[in-house]
Amino acid sequence: MELDTLTNLTEERLKVKISRQDKSVESLADDVVAGLSANPKTLPPKYFYDKVGSRIFEEICDLPEYYPTRTELAILENYADDIARQFDEPIRLIELGSGNSFKTRVLIEAFLRRFETLHYMPIDISKSILVKTANDLLEQYPNLKITAYVSDYHTALHALKNQEMGGKLILFLGSNIGNFEPEQALNFLKKTFATMNDDDRLLMGVDLMKDETILKPAYDDAEGVTAKFNQNLLVRLNRELDGDFDLSKFRHKIVFNGEHGRIELHLESTENQTVSLSKIDQQFEFEQGETIHTENSYKYSPEKLTALAESGGFELKTSWFDGNKWFSLNLLRPIDD
Image (cartoon, rainbow, N blue to C red; front, top):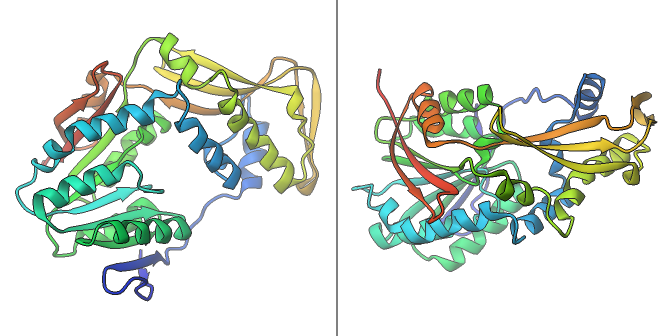
């Protein structure tokens, strides 16, 4: 869990730290063989986000049907000052999976209004995005200081726990908690709890359960952008594993699973076919109508969210909603046993 410090990149206001932790992440090939050999077939959603997939996802966020991004941003714009007022002393603002920090700028401005200076600590696996975004932010906000972590979430959070630097507000936006299976979501909260001190807080974006007539179009838009995002997973397998997936024979399919409270993304085979991945000498049979389950997006009721928070060691202190109550921002406090 050691972190190397890079040379400061912008005077004394920017530091970039890179995790030296050895990672035992399974390879793409191993995950694909395991997933396509299973019944039903699956592929891990983490492989959506190559360069093309990340760009397509940015397009999704701008779609009229895809409400989560603009709804969460509206909540931040309406309540950022209220969120900042939850703190009596300056805090470190830490963001998990910060990306381009687009929505976070609203909170940065609110905390700068309240405390005049702010120490922002984005955590992301992409050094290039972190450095570019950090320099953009420093140019825009003269009273901002940034320590960026090229790391997985909890390696960086553990490194921060014992620093004598005051309280922390950890941001986990975008309803990323909904992309975890319930057991994974609970494990995430427990691991995050273990990195927090009593005066720290977690601000988490959560997509709320709503009628499927609203949910399904958000994941099956009229322009077909989400379909392109889903199918890009097969494009990646063709490129990296020398596959012969024919995209015209796999259609984007959305399932609303009310029993489990989630939207499911699938790729459905339109005919009986055999697909080869020559680089790893593997073949997989598909029957007509058989699907590859590529992602779940869980939606929470306020009651389920409260129960999840408490099971993970947190008290749900305050929630902020949009006018339709489609989405919520939730401030969680770690509870001492």
